[in-house]
Length: 214
Image (cartoon, rainbow, N blue to C red; front, side):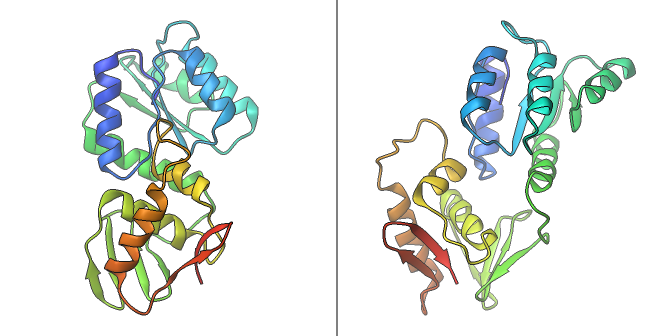
């Protein structure tokens, strides 16, 4: 989330976290470029009129880097020529202020799907069905109520298609940059997830590597 209006940035980030996204915030273009240089983001929600480094330059940097990160421009510039100019820079989507948070999150969900290899709308593995749009989980037809973080962790494990996902990857994708890298929150979340999913256990620990669903 790149936005120089602090209250707006914080409000949007909190909303997206409720939607099970891990969100980092940059309040100017320079900070955004710094974070983009070290973290592989799925989506950047980008204000255009930023201090230090303009949003257009941030967008150009993302496009020129060749990464799969998608750019959603979020700006008060509503004229057709402004929207055309923003898309011409390489932005994947353009949303004009003021906007509805539900529309913003829907657009971010759509862009995040495009930032990864194509997957079906519902993810399934080992009898578990994850519906990202509705944030619902079923196991063998039984509804499973999960917290936001439990849902995010399970979605990443199912999405991996049987591959091992490290604790570090889960921290990066389900939490944000402020999480302590030495925390045991992933282990605790997986423990709760196993209990809620029930027997037989499907989330396996690969010692010294991470977790997987075969």
